[in-house]
Each structure stands twice: as structure tokens, then as C-alpha cells.
Length: 152
Image 1 (cartoon, rainbow, N blue to C red):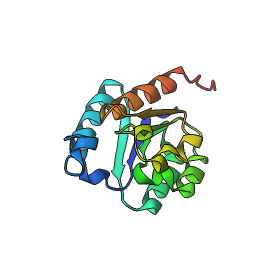
Image 2 (image 1 turned 30 degrees about the vertical axis):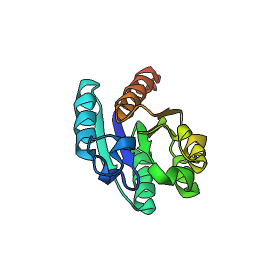
Image 3 (image 1 turned 135 degrees about the vertical axis):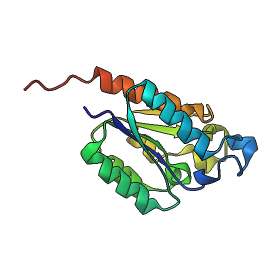
């Protein structure tokens, strides 16, 4: 199985460190990417790290991952609660998917308690800050390592 993992981020995640730091913390998206890349090297993973405020771009990256990736770590942000299209794209992806949320969405507004992405995710990490990304990468690496390889 491929050791390439897509780390996908939804809308407003580009404002990490600036937007509502009392909820999302002071780390920036660049900090998250740096930490993910450092851990990926340790885990012998390759990552593609993307963020978009556009739903269609996230869907296109999921489609791209279908052909090349061993897993997806996704923080769909507000698309979590609204995007059947992202769910449909994830349902075409056959490798593990880990859903990450920086805040504990279950302690927030009621509309944040529902996730379309969770219907497909193999695991959900919420409320652990940006450390959730690293935990997601660790879980994907473990699942890749445990997957039996096809014998020729």
C-alpha cells in the first residue's frame, strides 16, 4: 500500500492563529504543516498537504488521492456539517480516512454536532488541538503497516 497520505483542510483553516484563537489556538497552518512533515519523515510517510476554502478543490484532491494515496487525514472544517459532496467523494476512496477537528465540536453549537464526513471516516479526532493531525498521521501509518501486502 502506498505510504502517501493526503492531509486536507477545509475553509478558514488558512486563518489558524488569527481566527478565534481562544477556540483554535495560536498555531498557524504553516506550523501544522511543518509538524506533519516532521512526523511524516519519522513514520516514513510522504504527505501532500492542502487547504482550500473551495469545496470542489477538496473533492478534486480526494479524487486524486484515489489513484495514489494510502490514506487521508481531513479537517473538513465547516464542510463537515454541510457537504454531502465531500462525503460522496470520500466514499469512492478505499483506503483509511481519519477526520480531525481542532476544537471539540460536541461542546459547541448544536449544528456542529453532525458530521457527514464521520459517515465515512475510519476514526474521528476532536478537541485535541492541532495535535489531532499528528495522531491522525500515526493512525494512518499503523493501518498502512498492518495492511497485508498482495503476493505476486
